[in-house]
Length: 335
Image (cartoon, rainbow, N blue to C red; front, side, top):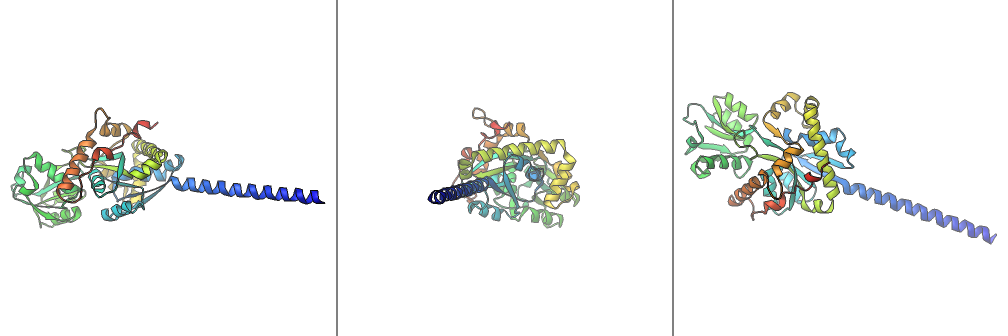
């Protein structure tokens, strides 16, 4: 009888031990899955389409990732989410990522989606004697101060031997600037599509656009540096996924446009029109834009200019080390 009781107790203890082990394994598996979750914030913009494609086509999942995409159109809200560590990555313009670094959030730029090739520009009224950038001297220009459009305008003015002190800036958002121009309230505006096209039709013309400044306004994805350090495998899988999504866009343009349109609640024809004003980067395009340690790509020069711009405009408290922000190591490991 004692032997039977002893055997029963041994069996019971083994059952409890195995059960606890299974629970621990399950818990570890859940923790592992949680570590792989990446929350990415982005605004409604066609250039970030590869993220929607990677999600919709199951590319992230296939590469072992749980990626959650949050569309947050307000730049301030996206920045705050990044500061509060509520998101691990943000799809944004390169210069905005630099300003975020200047705000004290260490980031790593690991992929470039595209560069503006006509999506941004300066539109001017006909009959106002504005035929070259130099003719803008002394004129009123509507634009959002200390933002991407201002950064673009400053570079354009600089090439013409001018600065933003040589023009009269009317501070508005890019959308407001475009609307004010169409309404005839200002003679010049720095804005983006569709306001550039609308402005050209409202007795105006596009004086200069990003077709003349390739790479100056580029869209990238920036991760929190602490997340990259703790989860290099997940970041690598993320970059691998974007490479696949970019390839899918090239091979399946019509389906890609439909996916992006659905994700942003737009029409496929609107996406198609936007595509014509952007130059998308595939893996090779990224490698060229990022360059190598021996021969840095254009991204370094643009990021440095952006850092100087935001610091001079007193939008950031310190000038960031932009070279440290750019991490091309994941591109070199894409299979």
